[in-house]
Image (cartoon, rainbow, N blue to C red):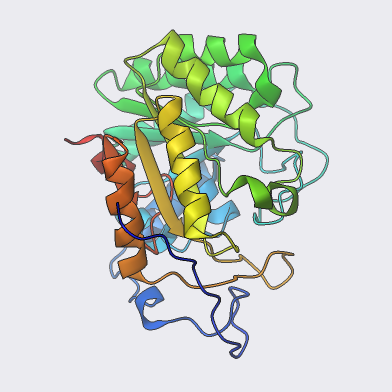
Length: 302
């Protein structure tokens, strides 16, 4: 077992749009060249589709869009949860668009996707939290791309067992639900989310359909300690979680209430990942730019 350390906060530095001071060298990289980025953007606009890439201001968007891949965000772009780490708009949710699954499947075909990732805003206003709409999207993609693998990245559906079971029975290849941070920081970072409820969702999916790959993600740099991260990893393994991702938290704007507490260096990600592998995860992906759906197709490879 590697020694446990505390992730130290960065010293004060000039403010950066990320909200955490001057970016260290390992968080800087060139923008991709070529026109594929524009192709992806125009296709999504043409089909009136939302992506978490744009709405969450993901730093990997230029790279992913240049590879003609994106993470589709269904059920509108207004969230009913006030999570303070996220830039997705909060407020009165939008009407569910019944033709969205068809448009999403069309985009997957035009992009030539072999692995389709579907996420959503949290819709606590809907009786099933939008689980049945997820299932319709899976069905629409399978009709058009029967050979493609499908990953869903879901909210917690307020622990609604029938909703979770219904989506599990739609048989996505990967069922992803992010814990985001350690329990101590939930009240600050995740609003109305509940740590144990999220663990129970992952446990329920794995028990109902063992063949589905279960997956979860954590952000580092909010103020957690490494021992706390290890505790979360152990909890994930206790509910049968197969894959875990760990990435650097970057505050999307200066207006967000959670500043970056520290920038975790790549070697620290490597240390944490090594311990995670000892816990028995089938796949551990960790690094400053890692996000839950970043190169998601590669996470299915042995």
